[in-house]
Length: 269
Image 1 (cartoon, rainbow, N blue to C red):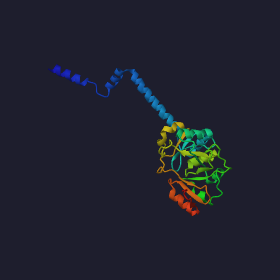
Image 2: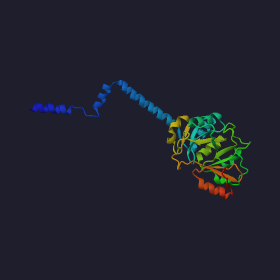
Image 3: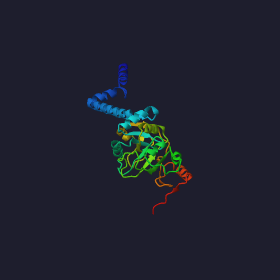
Image 4: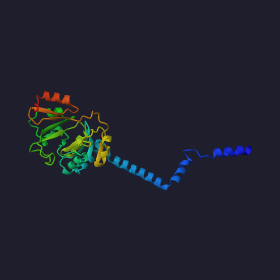
């Protein structure tokens, strides 16, 4: 009887615990082929994550020069603004501008806005002398895109928005993109960082599928915006204005326009 008890006890204590020895046993039974496949998948995943992480940078002054050099080389970068994340490139680089249209799936008939570092730089790319004194300084920097006459003396490349005699101009209230625009010394083509027709991006995760199309992605964190984008106002007619998109600063913009005695352009019937 004692011998029988001893055998039962030995049998119980010799059963392997689930989650330890059986794991090694399963690996042996399933063969090395699956193990290698799983290992390869994990390595590919790691490489993919690593590649993505290599293009992401914080949107700080330390990386501004790197961004400038990328633009000078004809590359596209992703940047935060005061409203949405955007794709940016040298507005005078036909190849870079074409890349933005291609990566967004955007029609070439849809114009691109430009971004400059300071309000005083706008006069190099658009006509401003017919505007009320101080108007642009009141609107910008800020979440507003002003549509101005391009003029014959514009320093913009003719290949940007061909056939249009006007141009949308931004001076975002965002130190990083303004520093990059100043350093480039030319206009920066700027458009929202998303596929055409898709929701706008308020953080870099929103356009992660397009990271691999950018030289660098500059992370400014989640933007405190409602996703409406900038307010677009047409100022091409002297003394008049027309709101083309309400955007995120419609009321503030209207107050400034009225303060400078501009009147709303009558709708075409």
